Image 1: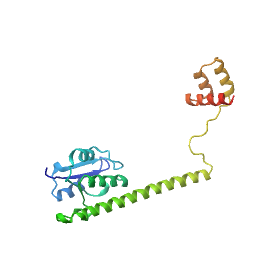
Image 2: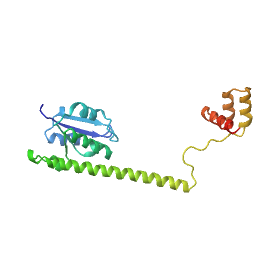
Image 3: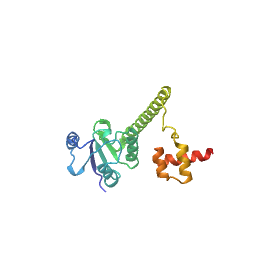
Amino acid sequence: MESRTYYYARVSSKEQNLDRQIAAFKALGAQERDIITDKESGKDLERIGYQALKNAMLRRGDTLVIKSLDRLSRNKSDIKNELQFFKDNQIRLKVIDLPTTMMELPEGQKWVFEMVNNVLIEVLGTIAEQEREIIRKRQAEGIKAAKAKGKILGRPALQFPNNWKEIYSSWKAGTITAKTAMEQTQTKRTSFYKLVKLTEENN
């Protein structure tokens, strides 16, 4: 089967336009039928156009052209995974903003593309890991700072209403319903039965 070249363009919202990316593709000789587009966020890979391209169109030996790596995704980890997918499936990725990937080399020098791809995968993986570590560190620092200020993190502990003993006794004796008891103690169903459990465990 003859190999084909596809082009993928993405912007983050319907208000933005794809003209600049499409013009760059057409300068390379792209035909309209081979250009796939999305007007969706790059936060993940669940985009109609991209998923159709990846799962139904691209075949082993094909080439995918994009304007820049962030058109694939804004997530470094996702980009790394996609590059690995293209490598594993022998799909050549050309990135217009990375001229090295655009070079046409003789058959015997295709190792250059392999080397560039491996470097990109390694660098992006390292950056993604560093970003995750920074996020974890910031979260830990935020929790530490909040505790230092005496802030209580997470859900507040369940408190017994002031009239709990009286209402609980009436409910237990069957003189009022659980619904009435919840209304009079201003508790929700889950909280009410948690308080019941705590009361009965301590009796």
